[in-house]
Amino acid sequence: MNIENYIEAQYRELLSTNSSIDVEFSELYTGIEHTKLHEILATLHQNFISLFRLMNERLPTKDLEAHFWADPSRSLIKTIEITLGLYNALKNTKLAFEINEYYFDLIKKCRDFLSSSGGSTIPSNMDKIDLYYTIPLFTPKSVVTIDHPQTTRSFALKQIGDGSYANVYKYRDTFYDKVFVLKRAKTDLTPKELERFRREFEEMREFSSPYILEVYRYDEVKNEYIMEYMNYTLDSFIQKNNSSMAIGLRKSIVHQILRAFEYIHSKGRLHRDISPKNILLKEYHDTHVVKIADFGLVKVPDSSLTTANTEFKGYFNDPSLVVDGFDTYSILHETYALTRIVYFVMTGKTNTDTIPDSKLREFVKKGLHADKSMRFKTTTEMVQAFRTIS
Image (cartoon, rainbow, N blue to C red; front, side, top):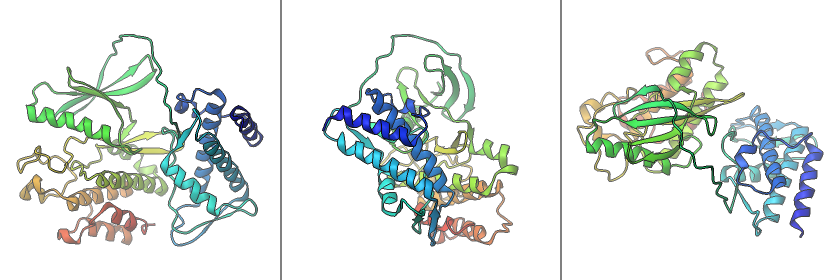
């Protein structure tokens, strides 16, 4: 097969279904040096996002099936055909690329139920689809390194936060024309506190999830590191928007939070400092993305950094920890704090004395039960229980 001709053919095929080649997601594919393949992948990304956004209007299906309209069904079939055709044709060439695992599984699932006529029947028990606005769906197997000009620049810092171990600032990097966050350790930390600060960075760097805040570089001399910038804490977002928030947005935020902690727990970690100030949101034109931050108290198996005297910090934590000691912290304390977060997102309140919605009331009652053995035992159990709340 002539690869150049095949790419050109797919490029023209894409133009036959799109009015133009899309550039919205072009920056995610700067590692693709082949110009037309770069444009194709950026456009395929846009197609998937717009079509899955439409499909989300019919999701989740729960125990029932749902109808997906004919025109978007045909468009999604064509987008999948071009994607998989390119993936297979380029597999053993220098232009080979990987498809994001979550989307690869989703593509194969959709391929099984999509119909080219009369619309498609979405199967039961299909969840809403996570829309990746800042994460590439396609990654080149051979990554090229781009050398930037050697420059040294200074940027003014504006303090935006103050914690036990660090001060937090934001700044605009004029080279990238983008806002970043700098987290700088305080100068009076003990060696153990400084070790905890450094471990927070290492833990966040090791995670690979769209729901964990990205960190970029640790400065060994200044004991500081750079992070991505987010628009809000969950606390500030709820305060600003509580009176106008639709139930769909509230449930989307909860689903993302629970998904994040499912991932964290799957890695054998407990966050231990769950609060509306450590859950962040980035606001896009038509969606809100949740990311978890502040892993300074993360519980790591066999770590020597946690003792019975570790300070009780998370203000959504189980009060029994004051008596029991923070070294007893377990998944049952984590699900307690997450239950309070779910209630806060769904109502904008922290007082759980009166809850009119019976299903939400049962959810909260179980999650905050005084008998720890009666609480949610996993985040997955919480996800399943939350699906029953209308």
